[in-house]
Amino acid sequence: MNEPRQVRPKTEGWSQKLDADGKPLLAFAEPKRKQPPVHLADLTPEERAAKVKELGLPAFRAKQLGTHYFSHYTSDPAQMSDLPATGREEFVAAMLPPLLTEVKRLQTDKGDTIKFLWRLFDGALVESVLMRYPGRITLCISSQAGCGMNCPFCATGQAGLTRNMSSAEIVDQIVRANEAIAKGQLGGIHKHEDGTNERVNNIVFMGMGEPLANYNRVMTALKTIVAPQPEGLGMSARNITVSTVGLVPAIKKLADEQIPVTFALSLHAPDDELRDELIPVNSRWKVDEALDAAREYFEKTGRRVSIEYALIKDMNDHGWRADLLGEKLNARGKGWVHVNPIPLNPTPGSIWTASIPEVTREFVRRLEAQGIPTTLRDTRGKEIDGACGQLAAAD
Ligand code: SAH
Image (cartoon, rainbow, N blue to C red; front, top):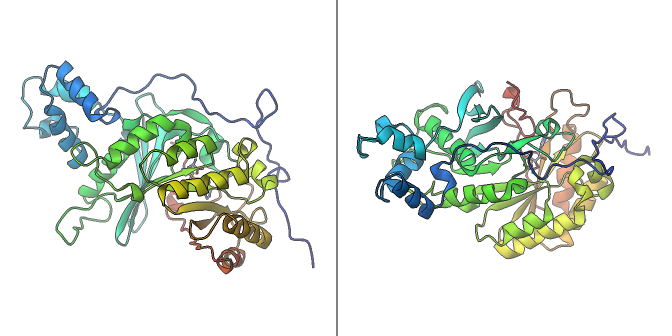
């Protein structure tokens, strides 16, 4: 039998950008940039109360603002008749400054997927993708403008890092998506059986950016997302997925935070030889270290973790790699992990492509044969360039 074909980023003409020491170029720290104005959603409840007092109003006004923003998705003073009319505009402008300006919105034919392109205060562009599924509404959000992790198959990774997003910029993506849903823009107005309005109930940090490279701001955002209304959005941590290329020290820190979010590791190769090329951060933390950290996350939180695996034709989709992945996961125990393969979404100008269906099925079959729960992920939003890895914020 012929040797299976092995395509590599290098053999396909890809060359890894290197830093001054000849190591793969990675941007962990952002370039110095002016930060957006401070917003209610950047602050803890105590800090909000203090700021409101500083502005000359009693602390309880912070809660009223919270209700407007987190429950009614508005930052418009005209809608806030429970606030004193005198000085209302200035007060609201100081507490809820506009953060995201809608530049463009793309929608699928069926209207069940919307991609938003947002402009931040300094002109940086980010995207979020809103998807209606039977029984749930998922929003894929960005945590950075651009990304410093430089993965060759990802459009955002190729664009480099512009800057970290602030906590409020992260949260505002959800508020603005909820506003669109409330206006019936995601395929009409539907009510839950109990008569309540629909809103985003599932968040994935799978838009632009590496969330664990913007650790503190992402943590503050998470706290606000799970805080009960009117202090936050009152969402359940288990319905939030934080996805990472594998920043091991940050994974360990996340496991200790007492916010049991769902954790996803973008593995994409079970062997260091290939992963070194596919995920440049593998030069810092190897496959086994990343898997150990994922296992530790499960032990500390009791939350089953996800392994993301973009299937790339003849690159990482070989049967032996499925077997090796299964072995490495089983070596760390049973029932702690599931695998989400997804056929690659080729990015514009990409030199490689998605695995063929037959190979994809075989990859899944081999994992399942080892007892690993495996769910093929869909590529929703592809036709509006809103699928995983396609977010490049090209205006
Ligand atoms: N930086 C984080 C989160 C953003 S990317 C991370 O890497 O996990 C979200 C997921 O989309 C990751 O699993 C990423 O590897 C995957 N992805 C990136 N480009 C892709 C592409 N072109 N096709 C399919 N998945 C892709």
